[in-house]
Amino acid sequence: MWRWQERFAAEGFEGLLRDKTRPSRIGPLGPEVAERVVALTLQDPPGETTHWTADMMVAAAGISASAVRRIWKAHGLQPNRWRQFKLSNDPQFVDKLRNPRCVPGSAAISASPST
Image (cartoon, rainbow, N blue to C red):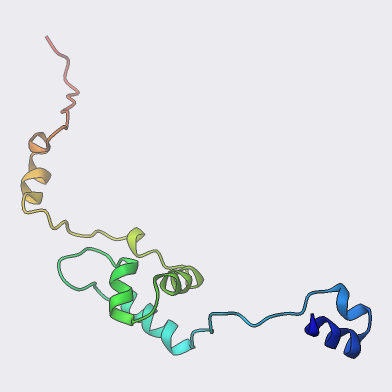
């Protein structure tokens, strides 16, 4: 109540018609943090993984997952959608590539007429 009284005393009736702006709970991240996240994203991820996840970036950069996602969105980065070939970590990858019939649940389609 006292805030409204102070606003009325300072700005009159017009001061009561609009909400006073409040500071954000979350402070802005500095540009050096965004640069570090972008640089890490463009490098290969640690271990046997094929792409960065938000949780892995949280551990590497030391910021929250929502901050990582905001930085990725602001820079147009989608680490799980790179337009390049990522070699699979599957130990049977070469066999599956050479012989698609060994992939469980796959069906082979033949172009030759059946008799």
